[in-house]
Amino acid sequence: MKRRWHCKSGEQPSELDKHIMYLENKGALVPTRELVLSPEQIEGVRRAGVVNTGVLDAVGEVIHAGMSTLEIDQICRDYCEQHGAIPACLNYEGYPMSVCTSINEVVCHGIPKADDILEEGDIINVDFTTILDGYYADASRMFIIGKTTPEKKQLVKVTKECLEIGMEAAKPWHGVNEIGRAIEKHAKKYHYGVVRDLCGHGVGLKFHEEPEVCHFAQRGDGMVLVPGMVFTIEPMINMGTWKVFIDADDPYGWEVISEDEQPSAQWEHTLLMTENGVEVLSY
Image (cartoon, rainbow, N blue to C red; front, top):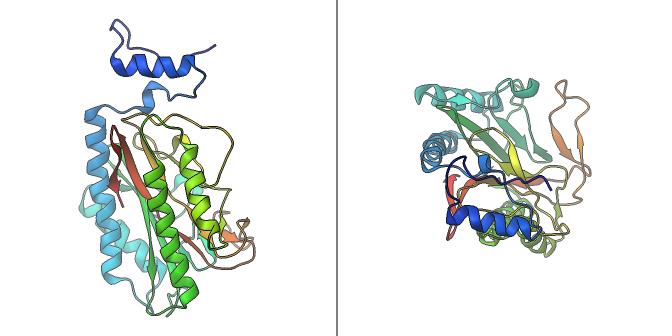
Protein backbone atom coordinates (compact mmCIF):
# COMPACT_ATOMS: atom_id res chain seq x y z
CA MET A 1 0.00 0.00 0.00
CA LYS A 2 1.29 3.44 -0.92
CA ARG A 3 1.22 5.49 2.24
CA ARG A 4 -0.25 8.98 2.30
CA TRP A 5 1.40 9.96 5.58
CA HIS A 6 5.18 10.05 5.92
CA CYS A 7 7.29 11.07 8.88
CA LYS A 8 9.77 13.87 8.33
CA SER A 9 13.10 12.56 7.10
CA GLY A 10 15.59 11.96 9.90
CA GLU A 11 13.11 12.64 12.71
CA GLN A 12 11.52 10.29 15.20
CA PRO A 13 7.74 9.94 14.76
CA SER A 14 5.75 12.41 16.86
CA GLU A 15 2.60 11.45 18.72
CA LEU A 16 0.66 12.99 15.81
CA ASP A 17 2.59 10.84 13.34
CA LYS A 18 1.93 7.71 15.35
CA HIS A 19 -1.78 8.36 15.65
CA ILE A 20 -2.20 9.10 11.95
CA MET A 21 -0.18 6.04 10.91
CA TYR A 22 -2.26 3.91 13.30
CA LEU A 23 -5.46 5.14 11.65
CA GLU A 24 -4.01 4.60 8.19
CA ASN A 25 -3.05 1.04 9.12
CA LYS A 26 -6.66 0.48 10.21
CA GLY A 27 -7.82 1.48 6.71
CA ALA A 28 -8.80 5.10 7.30
CA LEU A 29 -8.24 7.72 4.61
CA VAL A 30 -5.76 10.15 6.18
CA PRO A 31 -4.46 13.47 4.85
CA THR A 32 -1.05 13.93 3.33
CA ARG A 33 1.47 15.81 5.46
CA GLU A 34 1.09 18.92 3.27
CA LEU A 35 -2.55 19.24 4.37
CA VAL A 36 -1.63 19.59 8.05
CA LEU A 37 -0.29 23.11 8.41
CA SER A 38 2.50 24.27 10.69
CA PRO A 39 1.83 26.97 13.32
CA GLU A 40 3.57 29.50 11.06
CA GLN A 41 1.40 28.55 8.09
CA ILE A 42 -1.75 28.71 10.20
CA GLU A 43 -0.84 32.24 11.25
CA GLY A 44 -0.44 33.14 7.58
CA VAL A 45 -3.93 31.86 6.80
CA ARG A 46 -5.27 33.62 9.88
CA ARG A 47 -3.91 36.96 8.61
CA ALA A 48 -5.45 36.33 5.19
CA GLY A 49 -8.72 35.52 6.95
CA VAL A 50 -8.75 38.87 8.73
CA VAL A 51 -8.51 40.68 5.38
CA ASN A 52 -11.08 38.38 3.79
CA THR A 53 -13.57 39.02 6.59
CA GLY A 54 -12.88 42.74 6.22
CA VAL A 55 -13.82 42.59 2.54
CA LEU A 56 -17.24 41.14 3.34
CA ASP A 57 -17.71 43.62 6.18
CA ALA A 58 -17.02 46.45 3.72
CA VAL A 59 -19.65 45.09 1.34
CA GLY A 60 -22.15 44.68 4.17
CA GLU A 61 -21.80 48.32 5.18
CA VAL A 62 -22.97 49.66 1.81
CA ILE A 63 -24.96 47.00 -0.04
CA HIS A 64 -28.41 48.29 -0.99
CA ALA A 65 -31.15 48.24 -3.57
CA GLY A 66 -30.16 50.14 -6.70
CA MET A 67 -26.46 49.29 -6.66
CA SER A 68 -24.93 47.06 -9.30
CA THR A 69 -22.96 43.92 -8.62
CA LEU A 70 -20.12 45.55 -10.54
CA GLU A 71 -19.97 48.14 -7.73
CA ILE A 72 -19.61 45.27 -5.25
CA ASP A 73 -16.68 43.96 -7.26
CA GLN A 74 -14.98 47.36 -7.10
CA ILE A 75 -15.44 47.57 -3.33
CA CYS A 76 -13.76 44.17 -2.96
CA ARG A 77 -10.86 45.09 -5.24
CA ASP A 78 -10.27 48.39 -3.48
CA TYR A 79 -10.28 46.82 -0.02
CA CYS A 80 -7.83 44.14 -1.14
CA GLU A 81 -5.47 46.68 -2.67
CA GLN A 82 -5.58 48.86 0.45
CA HIS A 83 -4.57 45.86 2.59
CA GLY A 84 -1.84 44.43 0.35
CA ALA A 85 -3.88 41.43 -0.75
CA ILE A 86 -4.93 39.88 -4.06
CA PRO A 87 -8.42 38.67 -5.12
CA ALA A 88 -7.98 34.96 -5.77
CA CYS A 89 -10.93 34.71 -8.17
CA LEU A 90 -9.61 37.30 -10.64
CA ASN A 91 -8.54 35.42 -13.80
CA TYR A 92 -8.79 32.05 -12.01
CA GLU A 93 -9.45 29.52 -14.79
CA GLY A 94 -10.93 32.30 -16.91
CA TYR A 95 -13.16 33.85 -14.24
CA PRO A 96 -13.19 37.53 -15.20
CA MET A 97 -13.95 39.31 -11.91
CA SER A 98 -12.73 39.52 -8.30
CA VAL A 99 -15.81 38.27 -6.46
CA CYS A 100 -18.85 36.04 -7.03
CA THR A 101 -22.25 37.75 -6.68
CA SER A 102 -25.10 35.24 -6.89
CA ILE A 103 -28.63 36.63 -6.82
CA ASN A 104 -31.82 34.65 -6.04
CA GLU A 105 -31.82 31.51 -8.24
CA VAL A 106 -28.08 31.81 -9.04
CA VAL A 107 -26.55 29.16 -6.78
CA CYS A 108 -22.92 30.29 -7.05
CA HIS A 109 -20.26 31.87 -9.28
CA GLY A 110 -22.50 34.75 -10.33
CA ILE A 111 -20.39 37.21 -12.33
CA PRO A 112 -20.63 40.91 -11.35
CA LYS A 113 -22.10 43.09 -14.11
CA ALA A 114 -22.97 46.76 -14.56
CA ASP A 115 -26.56 45.85 -15.51
CA ASP A 116 -27.15 43.46 -12.59
CA ILE A 117 -28.95 45.92 -10.31
CA LEU A 118 -30.03 44.80 -6.83
CA GLU A 119 -33.75 45.14 -6.20
CA GLU A 120 -35.87 45.22 -3.06
CA GLY A 121 -36.49 41.64 -1.93
CA ASP A 122 -33.43 40.09 -3.61
CA ILE A 123 -31.19 37.72 -1.71
CA ILE A 124 -27.56 37.71 -2.78
CA ASN A 125 -24.51 35.64 -1.90
CA VAL A 126 -21.18 37.49 -1.96
CA ASP A 127 -18.27 35.03 -2.11
CA PHE A 128 -14.69 36.25 -1.85
CA THR A 129 -11.27 34.63 -1.54
CA THR A 130 -8.18 36.56 -0.46
CA ILE A 131 -4.52 35.83 -1.13
CA LEU A 132 -2.20 37.54 1.37
CA ASP A 133 1.53 36.75 1.31
CA GLY A 134 0.76 33.50 -0.50
CA TYR A 135 -1.94 32.32 1.95
CA TYR A 136 -5.62 31.87 1.05
CA ALA A 137 -8.83 32.50 2.99
CA ASP A 138 -12.33 32.01 1.58
CA ALA A 139 -15.80 33.01 2.86
CA SER A 140 -19.23 34.06 1.68
CA ARG A 141 -22.29 35.71 3.19
CA MET A 142 -25.92 36.14 2.29
CA PHE A 143 -27.43 39.61 2.20
CA ILE A 144 -31.17 40.37 2.10
CA ILE A 145 -31.93 43.55 0.15
CA GLY A 146 -34.58 45.48 2.03
CA LYS A 147 -37.66 43.42 2.85
CA THR A 148 -38.06 40.05 1.19
CA THR A 149 -40.61 37.23 1.30
CA PRO A 150 -40.94 34.99 4.37
CA GLU A 151 -39.89 32.06 2.18
CA LYS A 152 -36.61 33.66 1.11
CA LYS A 153 -35.93 34.88 4.64
CA GLN A 154 -36.37 31.36 5.97
CA LEU A 155 -34.10 29.91 3.29
CA VAL A 156 -31.29 32.31 4.24
CA LYS A 157 -31.76 31.53 7.94
CA VAL A 158 -31.87 27.76 7.54
CA THR A 159 -28.83 27.77 5.25
CA LYS A 160 -26.83 29.57 7.94
CA GLU A 161 -28.06 26.99 10.43
CA CYS A 162 -26.81 24.28 8.05
CA LEU A 163 -23.33 25.83 8.13
CA GLU A 164 -23.38 26.03 11.93
CA ILE A 165 -24.60 22.44 12.25
CA GLY A 166 -21.89 21.32 9.85
CA MET A 167 -19.29 23.11 11.96
CA GLU A 168 -20.55 21.33 15.08
CA ALA A 169 -20.31 17.99 13.25
CA ALA A 170 -16.68 18.62 12.23
CA LYS A 171 -14.66 16.96 14.97
CA PRO A 172 -10.96 16.12 15.25
CA TRP A 173 -10.08 12.54 14.29
CA HIS A 174 -13.55 12.00 12.79
CA GLY A 175 -14.41 11.56 9.12
CA VAL A 176 -15.26 14.59 7.00
CA ASN A 177 -18.48 12.93 5.78
CA GLU A 178 -20.11 13.50 9.18
CA ILE A 179 -20.45 17.14 8.10
CA GLY A 180 -22.63 16.39 5.07
CA ARG A 181 -24.85 13.96 6.95
CA ALA A 182 -25.63 16.58 9.59
CA ILE A 183 -26.31 19.32 7.04
CA GLU A 184 -28.60 17.26 4.84
CA LYS A 185 -30.60 16.04 7.85
CA HIS A 186 -31.35 19.63 8.83
CA ALA A 187 -32.13 20.85 5.30
CA LYS A 188 -34.55 17.97 4.72
CA LYS A 189 -36.72 19.17 7.63
CA TYR A 190 -37.66 22.09 5.38
CA HIS A 191 -37.84 20.02 2.17
CA TYR A 192 -34.89 21.94 0.73
CA GLY A 193 -32.46 20.54 -1.82
CA VAL A 194 -28.77 20.32 -0.89
CA VAL A 195 -26.62 20.99 -3.96
CA ARG A 196 -24.42 17.99 -4.78
CA ASP A 197 -22.41 19.26 -7.73
CA LEU A 198 -20.26 21.63 -5.66
CA CYS A 199 -18.59 21.23 -2.30
CA GLY A 200 -16.38 22.74 0.37
CA HIS A 201 -12.64 22.13 0.16
CA GLY A 202 -9.25 22.37 1.73
CA VAL A 203 -7.75 25.84 1.54
CA GLY A 204 -4.80 27.76 2.93
CA LEU A 205 -1.74 27.09 0.81
CA LYS A 206 -3.83 26.71 -2.36
CA PHE A 207 -7.23 27.95 -3.52
CA HIS A 208 -8.69 24.43 -3.63
CA GLU A 209 -7.17 21.24 -2.24
CA GLU A 210 -8.17 18.14 -0.30
CA PRO A 211 -10.40 17.25 1.41
CA GLU A 212 -13.64 17.60 -0.51
CA VAL A 213 -16.32 18.63 1.98
CA CYS A 214 -19.65 17.40 0.63
CA HIS A 215 -22.80 18.84 2.18
CA PHE A 216 -25.02 15.80 1.68
CA ALA A 217 -24.89 12.29 3.12
CA GLN A 218 -22.33 9.94 1.57
CA ARG A 219 -21.24 6.40 2.30
CA GLY A 220 -18.23 5.85 4.48
CA ASP A 221 -16.34 8.20 6.75
CA GLY A 222 -14.30 10.15 4.22
CA MET A 223 -10.94 11.70 5.09
CA VAL A 224 -9.96 11.95 8.74
CA LEU A 225 -9.93 15.56 9.97
CA VAL A 226 -6.60 16.09 11.72
CA PRO A 227 -5.76 19.11 13.90
CA GLY A 228 -3.92 21.61 11.71
CA MET A 229 -6.08 21.07 8.62
CA VAL A 230 -7.81 24.13 7.11
CA PHE A 231 -10.94 23.80 5.00
CA THR A 232 -14.25 25.43 4.10
CA ILE A 233 -17.80 24.41 4.82
CA GLU A 234 -20.12 26.17 2.36
CA PRO A 235 -23.55 24.53 2.01
CA MET A 236 -25.57 25.60 -1.03
CA ILE A 237 -29.23 25.05 -0.19
CA ASN A 238 -32.01 25.34 -2.80
CA MET A 239 -35.65 26.07 -2.03
CA GLY A 240 -36.59 23.33 -4.49
CA THR A 241 -34.55 20.63 -6.20
CA TRP A 242 -30.86 20.08 -5.47
CA LYS A 243 -30.16 19.90 -9.20
CA VAL A 244 -28.41 22.76 -11.02
CA PHE A 245 -27.30 23.82 -14.49
CA ILE A 246 -24.75 26.19 -16.03
CA ASP A 247 -26.30 29.34 -17.50
CA ALA A 248 -26.11 29.00 -21.30
CA ASP A 249 -26.06 32.79 -21.64
CA ASP A 250 -22.89 33.10 -19.55
CA PRO A 251 -20.04 33.42 -22.07
CA TYR A 252 -17.53 32.34 -19.41
CA GLY A 253 -19.38 29.16 -18.40
CA TRP A 254 -19.32 29.88 -14.66
CA GLU A 255 -22.78 30.85 -13.41
CA VAL A 256 -24.63 27.97 -11.71
CA ILE A 257 -28.44 28.17 -11.45
CA SER A 258 -30.97 25.98 -9.64
CA GLU A 259 -32.65 23.65 -12.14
CA ASP A 260 -36.17 24.79 -11.22
CA GLU A 261 -34.98 28.40 -10.91
CA GLN A 262 -36.16 28.67 -7.32
CA PRO A 263 -34.02 30.71 -4.89
CA SER A 264 -30.78 29.38 -3.47
CA ALA A 265 -28.63 30.43 -0.52
CA GLN A 266 -25.08 29.78 0.67
CA TRP A 267 -22.91 30.64 3.67
CA GLU A 268 -19.20 29.82 3.88
CA HIS A 269 -16.46 29.97 6.51
CA THR A 270 -12.77 29.08 6.40
CA LEU A 271 -12.11 26.79 9.36
CA LEU A 272 -9.10 25.45 11.23
CA MET A 273 -9.43 22.04 12.82
CA THR A 274 -8.07 22.05 16.37
CA GLU A 275 -7.97 19.44 19.13
CA ASN A 276 -11.25 20.88 20.41
CA GLY A 277 -13.20 21.39 17.18
CA VAL A 278 -13.15 24.08 14.52
CA GLU A 279 -11.89 27.66 14.82
CA VAL A 280 -13.27 30.21 12.36
CA LEU A 281 -10.52 31.97 10.36
CA SER A 282 -12.78 33.87 7.93
CA TYR A 283 -16.52 34.46 7.87
